[in-house]
Amino acid sequence: MRFRLLASAAALAGLGLAAPAGAADLSGRYPAPYVQPVAAFTWTGFYVGANAGYGWGSSSFSDPGGFIGGLQAGYNFQFGSPFVLGVETDIQYSGMSAGSYSLDYFGTVRARLGYSFDRVLVYGTGGFAYGQGSADFFGLSSTATQTGWTLGAGAEVGFDRNWSAKLEYLYVDLGSATFPTIVGPVSTGLDANILRAGVNYRF
Image (cartoon, rainbow, N blue to C red; front, side, top):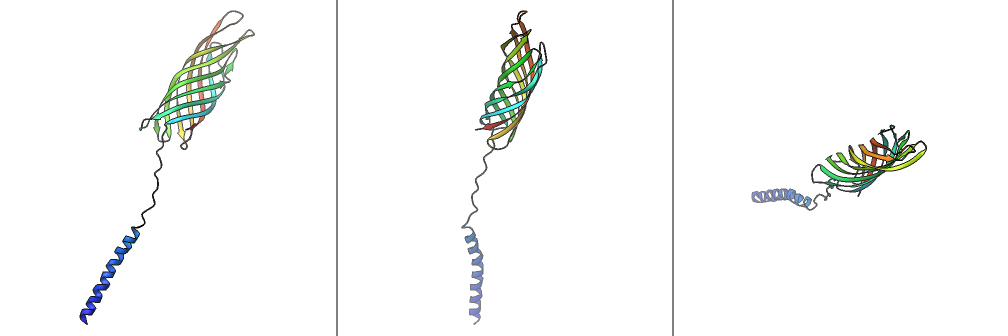
């Protein structure tokens, strides 16, 4: 009798030990679902966008100022680090005018070198600038192409993989151009400050 009691107790104890192990095996049959990691944000790629702002400056005869707006396109390359190198070109309508001189349009071709804080990019930029000025001296109107250089800085914020917004300042020196007048040729240059905001769509 005593032997049967001991055998029954041993059997119950064995079942008790086996039950948790079986439960552990059962739970192990259903691993946690796989979650694909989110791709790291990068500035690398082509982009196009639009901008608008205000320009002011000085020529030999007046201090023109007014609305500016246009389009830009470019390419960024991020080096697997915070550093970003890019190139950008833009073309701008210009309403900058005063007195006898006005700037009809201008554009730039620039390099950009930046440092990114994930989705925030701060950068410096510089390169070639060109434009068309108009002059009206004593009733004689004429236009001339002007070329020079530009330097500036800006900041850009990426909202998602495609869209970003930027704020940018440029100093533009368009050199000197010669305009015909009834009293002979007159030369004037333009130094301008450009402050503009824009949006980009990145591919």
